[in-house]
Image (cartoon, rainbow, N blue to C red; front, side, top):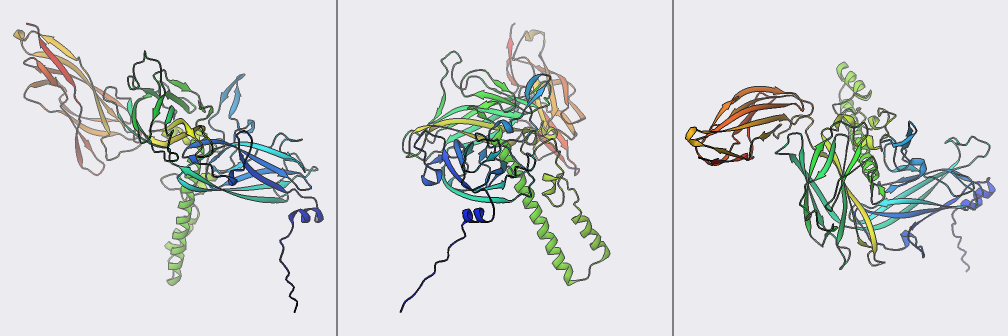
Length: 553
């Protein structure tokens, strides 16, 4: 008895390309941009940190019989940043170079932040990989998350037709390459921020940033060196409060965080004298020094500091729009199923037609959710641009924080210095509309000490109270009242009603009288705000306006 087995064999793509006509056939490999020997990323378990930015090389080889062009890359998460002359945002204005904040980053196509064009150079022709050629594309990869992350890459390329125009139409024959890399990502830093109004200047705020070293990737050398922190905004700039990192006369020392160490830094968020037309980056080092107020894409560790901020913002916005679109479709499907059970009225039919036509909601998105991210966006502002992260209409209400660092990394492979970046988006500075917190801020201008001869009567302490509406786009109606205490008497506008428009302030002149020397707290203000529902909410302020009164008799 003779048994013959026939093994099923897959179709040879190279053979098909030769028989059916010349076609390109690309292979893709990923290598870290380290010195030789180069080992493909998928072949070695190199440990990386959350927020670490690594330099990788995409090696594309054409082993087919025709040239390939129009290469694009689609990933599942916004890790890749492609820096090339093709994606530069530099423009010529009046003979000098300036940086535009409305252009795309990382050669991105569309609103997702994960679809990008691959710049092809180094071959015989730019944008084309001829048969037998190999091209390297340098990229920056910022890893995020914790645990083993599955990083998917889908390449698409087209057959180059020499007889067509320099940009072949998308109807050309195309092929795809799939690639997946398992990347183990370990924790690095925990970054959090809170902001509150300043108690000495009404238009300023105090930003408190808390940073914790949470590394667990190695037994030794787990220190993290903090580099810079920056704020991207059209309206605000950053200035560190002095005296937090030692004496300014001492030799500057970098701030290093050991394992499980935590540090809190405090900064002044100061409005610019004039709002800039482009989004700028205001930077501070973690050493006693001056502020570096940079232009868009000011360098953090010689890398574009805002590119990953733009990519993740675009990806998050697209995902939320897609989720809203899916929920809307589920709702419509459920309504249709319910309507099939009963005959619909004319009003129900009209409502269904209006919902499908794409009615704009309060957030400015269409009923299909995703349409606003694609069709309704302003063509001159790309969804992955810095202008999309810092829109003009909300520039006075929020800031974005970018923090860069360096550490000894490499896991068990090799010790080397790695760099990384963390960021926080849309940290609220001032509310756009009324919230549950007090919309009014108070500051006072008064002398710190007063000398008086009490044989001539009580001492007078002049003071000016500044009342400011924190809300950007809504007026506030309130009652102002000074609570009298047994030891302080007030004269002036002690009680009144007022309405402040968004961002407006009111200055109130008051005289305080004390009958004996001592230390007094002049803060006795009570603000009662009228809410939209007719209720009245009183607020007292945990501030101390201390004055020392001395007797000179």
